[in-house]
Image (cartoon, rainbow, N blue to C red):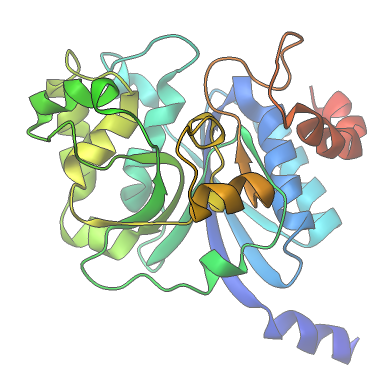
Length: 284
């Protein structure tokens, strides 16, 4: 028992944030399961910002991950009514904007977090992220989305050039202390409200507009999205991401749980889901 306690104490603590509503509860279970299964060397504290999920379901999830991985899940209810006028479309709902409030919702003593969307799976060790400390002046790290200039023309209304680099917000190392010091949450929400007619890619536009020139690029293997898989010009970064992805992010409206999905990593999602399918059936 003493040896086990010492091993537990030696694990490095890492904070990971998810944001969901009731529509993504089961997919969050799969995402978190894949994260914990592939990173047993870390003591991972999970922070779940949510809306419209029954308390008993959250308790059941917390107990499951505590029993299975000795993982602590802290939950934070967010009343999303103040987001009623934010830009929503297609498969995107208000929960996607919850990440804009991370710095204010989470305990003030937490300086850095890894934010993960719930439509992804973690298929390897995140040591390359967890061991890479964010420096002062860097607000976040993320993977370049590789949008074309045509896809970024609307950013000119935010004062950005369509030639500017643009990150995907589904996987982010976030410097919460910097966010608090610069009162970014208020800036994010103000932008989401006042620029809603110009917004195309929801909260991702907001983050890119407000964090321009204050973010650093992560290797694409930590957020493999369609644009990287479809890249016409190959480079070492995209080749490594496609060959050995660590995080597969199921972007766009067709998800691996849709029967008509053609995603090349659809089966990988289901391989993890089958391992927790019994729990999901009881949960839902």
